Image 1 (tube, rainbow, N blue to C red):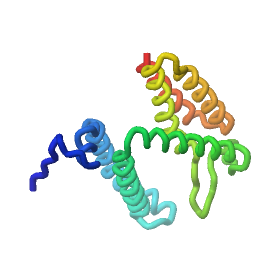
Image 2: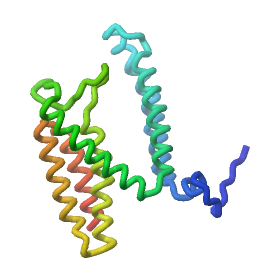
Image 3: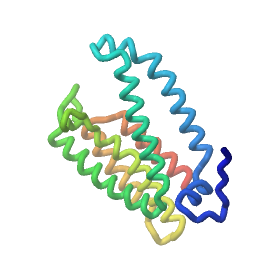
Length: 190
């Protein structure tokens, strides 16, 4: 079975196929492959020690892997404008959730990073991270398109605000990741 998608194909899938970063997809597939090898190798002993089914973590990994692949493919079909809008809304929502976590979250070892809702634990800063990356990249790109737009200054403000929120939890690890993301973007933006 040989599937050909012409460059003139203007369907959503056609546009996706000719604009998607195939090297990134290959790296993503390689990372998934490593995970599929390592989780079954390492998790059965831990699952048995915690009195779970031997393949509890393998099944959990498979479920979330399936959901994340579907989510990635669906989101990658959206236009850049839609992605920017979604990232802005996700960023604002995540900031609100991080603030609520600081005020009302469960404290574990002196840190308030988690909400517990319906048997699930949610760490809002995990949603903040990708939204932050898209929003700050958009701000840097905005300055490159129009020199009058203060993208760098706004991005610095967004970064400082985000880091302050993360340190109020405190969450040093997420602060380092956020700083690395922003620093790489700042460097690449010139």
